Image (tube, rainbow, N blue to C red; front, side):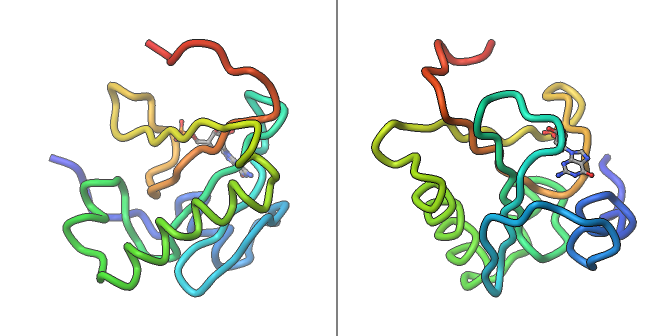
Length: 120
Ligand code: 5GP
């Protein structure tokens, strides 16, 4: 079984301002910032501000306002980045099989080039 949320994971520390980030967008419920090791010309991470490990954990525990706020912030981030017209890809890794590195829910936003077929 998965453990409890780790309050010292790197994204929790970014949310507390202990580690800097290149901010793209911030709302009551979400923060968007550039990935430190970009895998595309545009590679941004959007995270909810609450302590959720994965999409399933978030779905179980978050309030309707947090869920709506997070989903809306993902869309707003894509628009702020100018990706709505050229297009973009969203990705959320969860757990070992998906190689989730940071145990705080995050959605990757990729864009800035033609991305090719979906990952395996
Ligand atoms: P995951 O594999 O968990 O889906 O992706 C975690 C992402 O977080 C990776 O793309 C990685 O480059 C990014 N990342 C890890 N540490 C930091 C950090 O300190 N700052 C930022 N901006 N991104 C990070």
